[in-house]
Length: 135
Image (cartoon, rainbow, N blue to C red; front, side, top):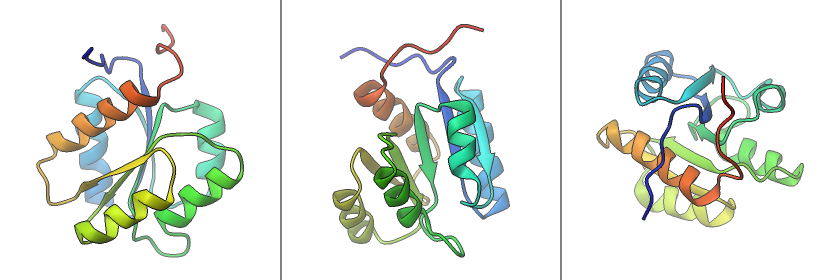
């Protein structure tokens, strides 16, 4: 199986918990991804249009529009972006959620942070449409 070289692959990370948002951003950037963040689901559609990410990483439990509703809204709008739910919800709930959102998987927030990188890499390997753009 070929490995994914993260350099240049783009990720949008959405989480309302500031510390986790910054941790996820640092870890993914350190792995070589280009990362854009949002602390709210509001405006994420525009962020996606502007930066054309390869993967969307979403917290599930957020005020207003939660991550699951955001993913389903994007999907209904014709989006085919792979989604990684990054959440502290019980595993059974996360498994059920991934059955309702196409091209999705999850990482538990209690898992080692390296799991987030590995899961994003896997989703790119499975779903990326092209190689990353050159700078």
